[in-house]
Image (cartoon, rainbow over all chains, first blue to last red; front, top):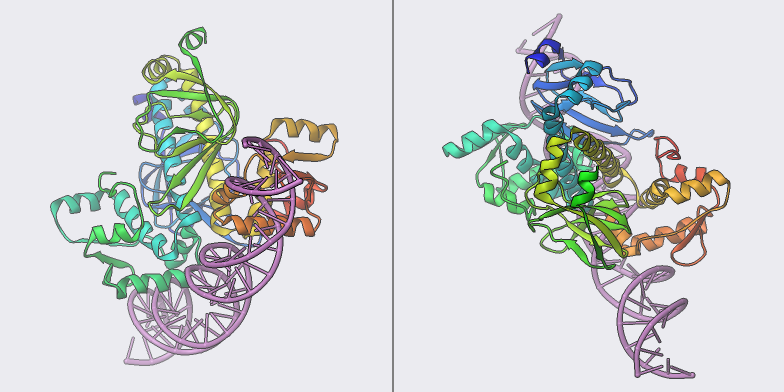
Length: 218
Length: 218
DNA sequence: ACCGGGCCTTGATCCGGATCAATTGGGTGA
DNA sequence: TCACCCAATTGATCCGGATCAAGGCCCGGT
């Protein structure tokens, strides 16, 4: 790992900036240190679909891949830990352990992508919103901690309504309406537009229509 | 590779049989030799979404993964090339090259899954059908060959209308209607219900609304 | 030849989410 | 404090695809 340390350098990206354009040749791979970014695809007529959420420790840019197929956009200020692509790939070949770890991470992403396909193809708008909230909760380590501590489950949405819509394959109006409906029905409480309280996690998961585990442990 | 050869054994599965149930503990990993299988997820109320198509050379079961999260079902008779899980994993650790290859394949699947997310979230029923046809053409090596030879582009659909629907996040009635509409508009011709002729590939790709490459070379 | 059962098509109607259109609210800077 | 801007909400209407319901086609069995 000391070898890796010698290669790395840091880069910051402001909220809203695009880190990679689809089609760009990338000459580095990076890991997110702090902040949140999104991976999205766009059709010529402007329809866009987010296909991945990048949280701290996730990878940007694929070793061994030619060009990026997606836009990567910072939704918050971001700190990246970068490696020049060529040296990193060489190191990877010499160090099976790194490739192993990368495979593990990629398989996790593949599972996440497939879970999302079920959501996009078969869930209703209401179920989509509930599922998004459940997944945000599941993937946020600090929330997991708070949960185990028995505190009230509350957090800030890291996404605008529009970003949620791009994620869920909905329009922002539908997102807004369904959020209001979930609030009206007592599934969630809105402290402010972005700050949410979940009074009953089991209820939320039920709304998500998710047969999978409650999603508590990762 | 001789070491791998010593470990492998073959298994056949009939069309319609389920190879793995989601949640089952798998004690082997396998590669498809001949035939086609599908990967799907099902909600408690029966809604199902296919999340992957498995063609010859694709993997069933993930080394290092605990339980399968999906059903794997044979749509045609299948021949599997199997390896017991434990020995395969040990071999993989000793042989970086295998891990490398597995990573490459997994990244391809991730790209395919994300392309599919765009389809599920943002495309119309008509675009979905056209895209499915385009992808079947793109992934069928023998068709690619025929294409380069300049022959007419025709093939049998390896899926029922219901399977197509599960793939595209539609109902089978909608699939049927849109296939009829594409036929009416001259985008495709139906020799029989399953046997399709594409008179003009460019036209089909346009209908697919795909900004990506024509999809000719893989 | 007749029947039966998959698979597929087609029609009629319904409904969830998209679209179009105001309006509100919160935050920021002058 | 006010003006402005952008995110979000809410309302009215429309439309694409789902749902419910009949048939039609093809093949295999008797």
